[in-house]
Length: 135
Image 1 (cartoon, rainbow, N blue to C red):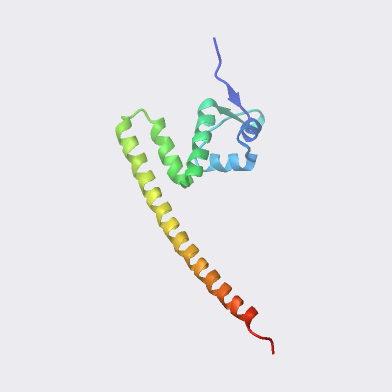
Image 2: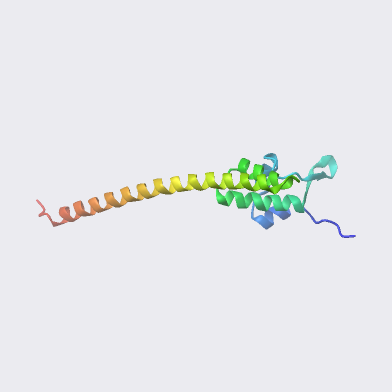
């Protein structure tokens, strides 16, 4: 009979290039729920489910979702309910996040245009200063 693989906090930290402190933080946020073993339950034992949840959490972070949004979405997939509402919720979160990113991009583009204008003006002024006769 095959046993399900388990992982230590160090295993996951190495695999995902994280600190053990970051993994404990994800645990505190309710994203991971390791079993406890050893004296006083000091040793964390992570299952394949925890590993998958960590992987999904990091993917959500790369998308720019908050940890709360990530947890809500990941928790939906853990429940045995119909996937329709889960996918609608995921699409809503993604659409909101896309709108946020588009607004940030518009702000950045406006800022970039302003920088370009100031550069052009500064170059023109510098050109005039360098061409004018020195007193």
